[in-house]
Length: 107
Image (cartoon, rainbow, N blue to C red; front, side, top):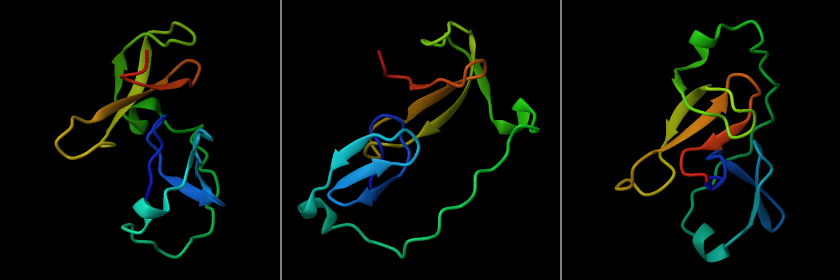
């Protein structure tokens, strides 16, 4: 299993690269590293879930943070462990105004 360095989403293989299904980032495959991975059967792509009628409160917590894209001061966030267990979690933000996504350590 490989995770995207840009957004933290799980990546899938396409030929000789890993591709993020969320943001489209790519990175080359490493056969030596993949020899230690466990694989599962591929599943069919699921359909997109319509969240247009779900209240923001039901989607997840929000915080006061400035969006680097539009300058709005509110974003939803989630914490993900993308490094080793002894490293702190990374916080990912989604602007409630424009939908721009970024992570806490982006500059």
